[in-house]
Image (cartoon, one colour):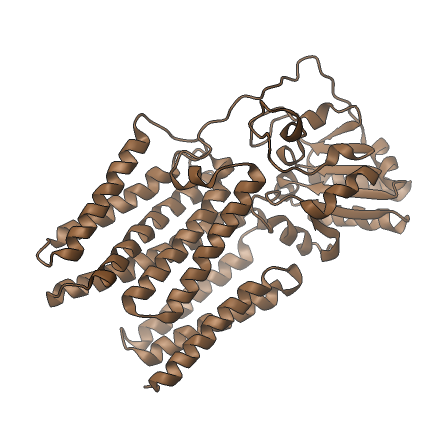
Length: 463
C-alpha cells in the first residue's frame, strides 16, 4: 500500500500531466509531445489505482492493459486519416461504455449491501449511467453512418422529439425513485439502462451523415462528463479532473464546428440536427462554367508568384496530400510562394486537415487558418481549390436565402484566378449550388484529385 498523502500527490501529478498534454495539443509542433505527456499521466493513474485498491486480480488488469494497448496501437497505425472521425466515435463509445459499467457496478454493489446511496452519490451514479449509455449507442450510430454501414440520411418520424422527451422524463423519474427508495426493484435500474441506450439511438438517427462530425464532438463531451460523474461515484479525483477536461474540450470543439458551419449547438443537443436541407435561394439555370485542362492549369501555377491552396475533403478522400506537396515544392523552386488555407471543417473535424498535410511533410507555418489567410486572397495570383465546396461558396456572404448564409468561409473568390479541382459539378454537404463555380475568374479542372495532381506535377516540371 502507498501512503494516502503520497497517493493524492501523485494523482495530482497525473491530472497536471493531462492538462499540460491538452495544452500542447494546440499546436502541430507540440502535439506529439502533448500526446506523450497525456499518455504518461494515464499510465501513472492506472498504476496508482492498482496500488490503491484491489478491485480485481492484478493479472486481469494486466491482461486488460495488454489487450487494450494492442487494439489501440493497431487502430492508430491502420486507420486512415480520412477515417479519423469514425475512430473518434468508437473511442467515445468505449469511454461512455466504461462509465456505464463502473456506475452500474457501484449501484448494484450498494443493492447487494441493502444500503441506500447518499443523494449526491446516487445522482452521480444515475447521471453516469444515463450519459454513458447515450454515448455508447449514439457513438455506434455515428460510426455506422460515417463508415457507410447504414444510410447517412437523417431518419425522422412523427412525434420523434415528443417521444425523446417522454423517455428522458421516464429515466429521470425512475432514477429519482432508485436514489430515494432503497426498496425500489433492481428491474427499474435495468429499465433506466435500456431506455438510456434507446435514447442514444433516437437522438442520433435524425442527424444527417454530413453533420455527424459535430455530433461526434458532442458525444466526446458526453463521454467526458460521464467519466467525471463516475469519478464522483468512486471517489477518484483524477477521473473527475480528466473527465471534466474531456467534457469541456468536447463542448468547445462542438461550438467551433457549429460556428464554422453556421449551425446551432442547441439543435445538436436536442436532436434533429441536419435532418433537413433547405433548398438554395438561387439556381444555376442560365449560368455557364469555364473549364480548363492540365496544360493550361500547369502554366498558370508555374508562373504564379502567390498561390493559395484550399484543401477540402475531396483531397483527403483521394489521399492526395503527397502530390500537393510535390506541386508546392515545384512552384517554390520557380520563385513562387505557396500557402494553405485551412477551414475549421475542411477535413470533417478541426485540425484534421492540418494533420493530413503535416503527414506529407508540409511545413506547419504554411498551414494558415481562416482568420489568418482570408486577407491574403486579394493579392493572390491563383487560388487552387482541391475538393472543397461549401467552405468557399460566396452564397454564405451574398445570398440571405441560402441555408449556409452567415457561415464563415474562405474568400477564394477574391483571388485573381481560381482553379477548382473536382470530380464533377455535384453539390457539397449543404446540397446547394456553389456560386464560385460560375464566377468568370473560375476554371474547373475535373478529375480525381490525386490523378489530376500527378499530371499537374508532371506538366509543371516541363514548363
